[in-house]
Length: 198
Image (tube, rainbow, N blue to C red):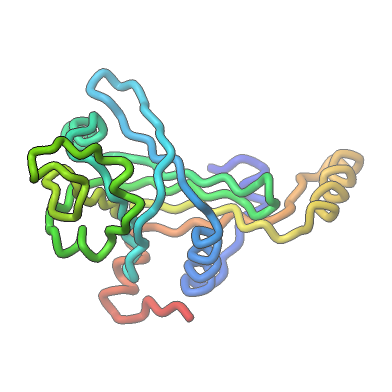
């Protein structure tokens, strides 16, 4: 059962349309909030840059495997990726998924760029130098369970008008649509070679 707002704002465009607009939304964002869960149940969130969203919709981040988030995802792989574009009137997204570590340095090489070195101090031992071959530099991959994307459809002025008129009429404001995409939908479309975005 959904709340009044979710019920009013829910739409069902095609999977291709949902993923195309979502990918465009992510391309416009500099970073996301990645939340992990510690062994005592406490949640830890941090800002991270997405290194890649694969064609089959896995989110990849470069990170330090000596960091505490690595310990957390080994204990509990459930994570959340959140993005807020409401200040720019572009909507928001929340992705629930499961994380795993990729230590394939071919993948690291593909995603690595020189600015990443700034986050890995050179230990001066000729090994831990922040390069793609540094054993600390690995990829954190999140496989989607469910995506909830608020696709903003009205301008800032249109949103203000919608909120005011809804307040007066007693109806629910809907400045955009909430789109839900499951990991199963994505996997099924990928397996049938139907996951096509322009």
